[in-house]
Image 1 (cartoon, rainbow over the protein chains, first blue to last red):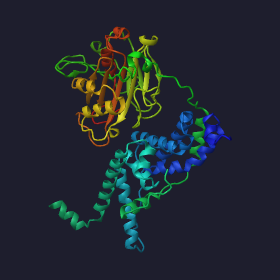
Image 2 (tube, chains in turn orange, green):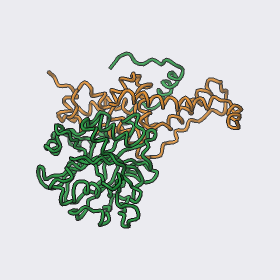
Image 3 (cartoon, chains in turn cyan, purple):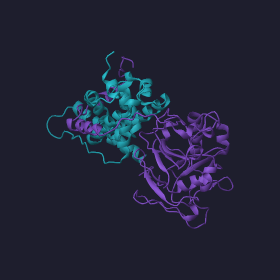
Image 4 (cartoon, chains in turn orange, blue):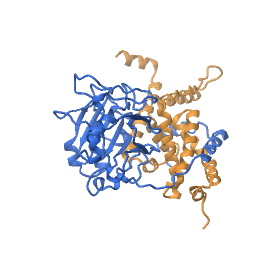
Length: 185
Length: 296
């Protein structure tokens, strides 16, 4: 039987691992960026993940779960990057100030900004669950399996993340007059 | 994995999914190249070395003893005092920098420890001292994850140290951190410790719960809460970065320190017992500072 790339890499074949890394790198970056919201941190997380994956690969029990295993390593690398306390990049989205602005365009830009702000308030663990569920499209049991956490924990983290983001959106949708009235009440 | 991907079922879900499609999708070549250069210099982990301490009869699962031994300082009146009882001078001052070995005050150093080596965990960022005639058994290579077992043959989530000697003469030191979110539904450190026993150690938890006592850091160089669980064969300690024993949302980290040896073991006599040894080690820890998470 011809050994797979994963099996060859497990046996110490660096070229095989390089092929795996090239194949997975883009997907890992996409996930890391959506969790960390900072390209520099995301790139660091991906780099750490690939090196750790090489080192730990002989310990992988099921070669068919290589991708899921790699994503789990990535998530923990993202947690470490988030804990290092580096300053987040501004990633400012400029609001349109000139030219024709349709209501739909204005809302979408503002909503993006509010989601970004709300998302940055989330701890990385909640972000990871949110990204795995809404971006990767995994069901909650699949998220639990991929991240190696209980289903209840997944539900809890998603619940808190969703509430935080909804609150960020709803705060923006309230009119200034309504917001002022609530403030003065 | 199911091939039926989740389909957004609400406006919020659609909005969230659409928003998350934005962002970089391509890894820069320089990042991949840097990773592969580092891979070329990195040795794969191949050798499975059993954690010897966990196969020792005194630490075996069959004996119902978890190999996690956490530094605990037994006090009076059900309160465990770290460093000094209230009003006593000479509290050690652990330095926040990793370059200087924190030196406990003479009254805090277990006998038999003449010098300390400073260690900083590459995974958790915690800094602490261990006796300089000990050695690093194996560093942690990843975070603790839900589902991790203790004791186990491999403890990849823990920094591990070993005293001189062989077999039952050796004492092990095991240190790691857990995020409190792993133990959902726990409102305080005591409840978390109970749940740890139920879900991770899975033995002798009635005894575990009965012996748990709070540890007072009020006169030490740490702000935080700790629960000490001295047992016949080992002592457990769960250390929080919070000023109270209440578990707050999401951001709390718990430090677990284990001395794998019975308190009255002959090998621990020169330290005044495993409990005294653990006390000395924990006084070197700067795992928390007021208002900061562990290791910062």
